[in-house]
Amino acid sequence: MRICTWNIQLGKRLDRVVDAVRSQPDFASVDLFALQEASVHDGRADAEAIAEALGPGYRSFQATAQVRREKSQANALIWRHGLFQSGRSPEVVPLPGPGDVEVRPVERTLLRAAPPQARMALCVESDTLRVYVLHLDVIGFTHKLEQFKTVVTHMAGREPVSMEIVAGDLNTFGPARVQVWRRLAAAARSAGLVNVTAGIRRTHWTGQKLDAIYARTATPVSHRAWTLKVRASDHLPVFAEINPRAH
Image (cartoon, rainbow, N blue to C red):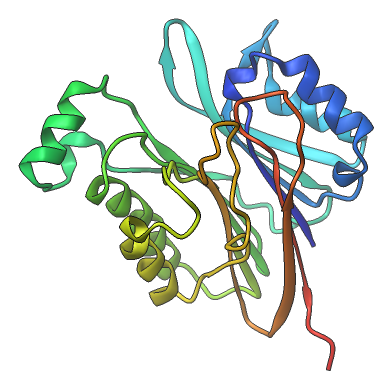
């Protein structure tokens, strides 16, 4: 299974995103495509336009987290037709805001200094596959940890499936192995989630490691991950392939 996650920066360069999807071989066999900061252009959801560029065998769902400066900011999932056959509707999982988490005074000051933003995760699932698309807040350490834990808690309340994917923009500013995010990594490990993109060192044009793909599977798998250097957003598209491990 090939997965891509990409923050497309409100679709400011949607034409370049669509061109990359059509022309770059990395997208040709993608099964799941998680989008953050998708928007609406000419009355059409960005996810719909990107799904069309991938080909007729794709479906999409997009949900708006907030509207800022009259611009929709949304999470979305695009998937290859047939992956979700159970007929379950996609679910929006609200993530805690700045006033919902007990944090230290310094972090509280930082959160108050930034404009409040609504964050959420999408959950799309079938009897065998569950996918979360999330976009964590820009500021805050404990705050982002609690947002991530909200997704972990939601997972824990669902029926077991063969594979679970958590993909998105975690806004984990800093080098790939920075220790400040060890609590977030520990929360993922405690839930049995493996960061299949741990070896990637840069997912943003500034050199930051902001984006990740996690997986939890019922059977052993092999995986690899990479980024694609296209300038259609301030983020790079992040890819992972997850396949059953050969015996």
